[in-house]
Length: 72
Image (cartoon, rainbow, N blue to C red; front, side):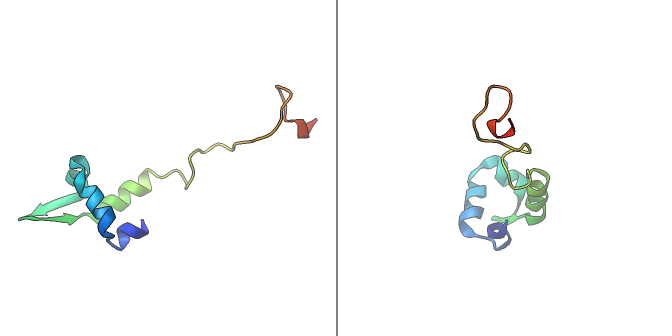
Protein backbone atom coordinates (compact mmCIF):
# COMPACT_ATOMS: atom_id res chain seq x y z
CA UNK A 1 0.00 0.00 0.00
CA UNK A 2 2.92 2.35 0.62
CA UNK A 3 3.90 2.11 -3.04
CA UNK A 4 0.36 2.84 -4.15
CA UNK A 5 -0.04 5.72 -1.70
CA UNK A 6 3.11 7.27 -3.19
CA UNK A 7 1.87 6.61 -6.73
CA UNK A 8 4.79 4.34 -7.59
CA UNK A 9 5.17 4.32 -11.37
CA UNK A 10 5.94 0.60 -11.60
CA UNK A 11 2.90 -0.44 -9.58
CA UNK A 12 0.56 1.89 -11.47
CA UNK A 13 1.97 0.61 -14.76
CA UNK A 14 1.32 -3.00 -13.71
CA UNK A 15 -2.27 -2.15 -12.82
CA UNK A 16 -2.77 -0.38 -16.14
CA UNK A 17 -1.47 -3.35 -18.14
CA UNK A 18 -4.32 -5.66 -17.09
CA UNK A 19 -7.63 -4.72 -18.72
CA UNK A 20 -9.77 -5.92 -15.79
CA UNK A 21 -7.69 -3.98 -13.25
CA UNK A 22 -7.58 -0.91 -15.46
CA UNK A 23 -11.39 -0.91 -15.74
CA UNK A 24 -11.85 -1.41 -12.00
CA UNK A 25 -9.27 1.02 -10.58
CA UNK A 26 -9.03 3.76 -13.19
CA UNK A 27 -11.37 6.22 -14.83
CA UNK A 28 -10.55 7.52 -18.30
CA UNK A 29 -10.86 11.27 -18.72
CA UNK A 30 -10.20 12.26 -22.31
CA UNK A 31 -6.96 10.38 -23.06
CA UNK A 32 -5.75 10.08 -19.46
CA UNK A 33 -6.33 7.28 -16.96
CA UNK A 34 -6.87 8.59 -13.42
CA UNK A 35 -6.16 6.16 -10.59
CA UNK A 36 -9.05 5.61 -8.16
CA UNK A 37 -6.91 5.16 -5.07
CA UNK A 38 -9.85 4.98 -2.66
CA UNK A 39 -11.37 2.08 -4.63
CA UNK A 40 -8.01 0.30 -4.64
CA UNK A 41 -7.47 0.91 -0.91
CA UNK A 42 -10.96 -0.44 -0.13
CA UNK A 43 -10.29 -3.52 -2.27
CA UNK A 44 -6.99 -4.20 -0.50
CA UNK A 45 -8.49 -3.77 2.97
CA UNK A 46 -11.42 -6.06 2.17
CA UNK A 47 -9.17 -8.80 0.81
CA UNK A 48 -6.29 -8.85 3.27
CA UNK A 49 -5.62 -11.86 5.49
CA UNK A 50 -3.91 -10.15 8.43
CA UNK A 51 -0.51 -10.16 6.69
CA UNK A 52 -0.31 -13.94 6.63
CA UNK A 53 -0.99 -16.80 4.27
CA UNK A 54 -3.34 -18.57 6.66
CA UNK A 55 -5.45 -17.86 9.69
CA UNK A 56 -4.33 -21.15 11.25
CA UNK A 57 -1.23 -21.72 13.34
CA UNK A 58 1.27 -24.12 11.83
CA UNK A 59 3.43 -26.43 13.89
CA UNK A 60 6.61 -28.09 12.83
CA UNK A 61 7.95 -30.96 14.86
CA UNK A 62 8.03 -34.69 15.47
CA UNK A 63 4.84 -36.58 16.22
CA UNK A 64 3.91 -40.11 17.18
CA UNK A 65 1.02 -39.84 14.76
CA UNK A 66 -1.34 -38.32 17.32
CA UNK A 67 0.56 -35.81 19.45
CA UNK A 68 3.67 -33.72 19.14
CA UNK A 69 6.49 -35.41 21.01
CA UNK A 70 7.15 -32.42 23.24
CA UNK A 71 3.67 -32.92 24.78
CA UNK A 72 4.29 -36.55 25.87
